[in-house]
Length: 168
Image 1 (cartoon, one colour):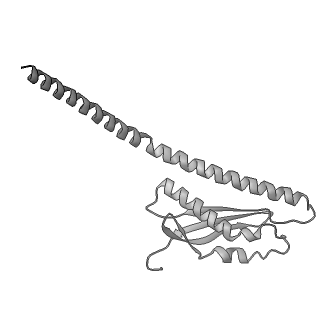
Image 2 (spheres, rainbow, N blue to C red; image 1 turned 45 degrees about the horizontal axis):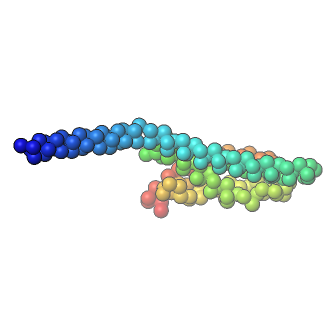
Image 3 (cartoon, rainbow, N blue to C red; image 1 turned 30 degrees about the vertical axis):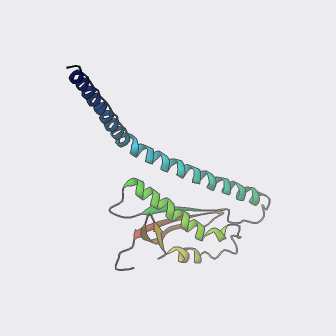
């Protein structure tokens, strides 16, 4: 009789322990789904802010360097804005793709920094970028220059269209 009572108590403890662990697992799944997207968005914003800070630091260094040479007008920075097209992109993917393409395009035009505005060949800038195929987030995109502003700060607006599989 005592063995039956002990077995009954042990079974009850095991059931309570199982329900406790089940509650912990379900609670963690709920919290993960509730805050997972926010965490991803915050991580993206943090990465974007740190890259923006690095670009501002580089721009500050270029401006300091250009201040010492006031007579000569040189290209200080290249700023690129990208608009990614695509039907199956959510906002986070679109922002990530735009940031990656802008970063790659900026690397291609890095040689423009420090060049004199008088000696700069304006016609070559769109030719470097137009019809260029770049990869971002595992997808291929074709670039098209929409707006180009040439000054000490070159501003370029690009449109990135997904590459059709037929074109590859």
